[in-house]
Length: 174
Ligand SMILES: CC(C)(COP(=O)(O)OP(=O)(O)OC[C@H]1O[C@@H](n2cnc3c(N)ncnc32)[C@H](O)[C@@H]1OP(=O)(O)O)[C@@H](O)C(=O)NCCC(=O)NCCS
Image (cartoon, rainbow, N blue to C red; front, side):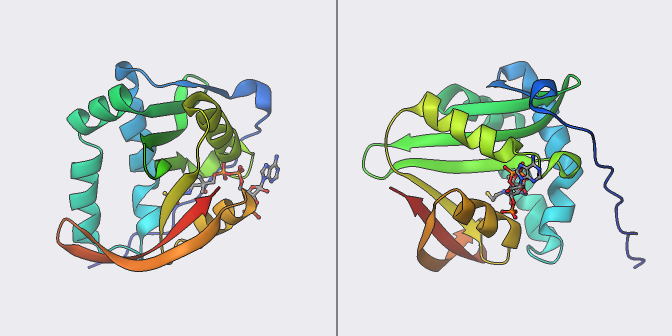
């Protein structure tokens, strides 16, 4: 098999004013999937086996799954030039507090504080409570992001995702 050439990431001039953060609506589903498709393989290349990536994508990002997520949780999108360039989902649990189900920013918009904006706005919208995030063990960028946001690692284990074992670290912020 011929390996795909490395993808070139074009950085965009970004300021706070040309990116807006707002609650997701059902008509965003296509844009959310497109944003993720742009990054999914790059993020999980060498981290999650290819077959498993396809299973996870089908299960977590099907139209029905996204429709339910938008309806039942705090789900925000970041929008620039009318395209969805990032999103966050926060779910609330009475015992365990909030947990970050997903947070993504497309590579050309990373490192402009959009992940931070998404997280801060989601916490404000969701209300008080502790917050947790589960991160794949080798996802260094995400570990750095959560640590910078004041999270600390509290647990390490192998989780079963649709029959695939994945080592993960749980982060928590009081
Ligand atoms: C993790 C993720 C959401 C962070 O999004 P982001 O928009 O890049 O986050 P921020 O810009 O707020 O912070 C990232 C870095 O940019 C820096 N930064 C923030 N604003 C900046 C600015 N205006 N100029 C330069 N750097 C800036 C931050 O200090 C931080 O630096 P660090 O990585 O050295 O700690 C993003 O990398 C991503 O989508 N990763 C893939 C998906 C993923 O792994 N999700 C988490 C697991 S569920």
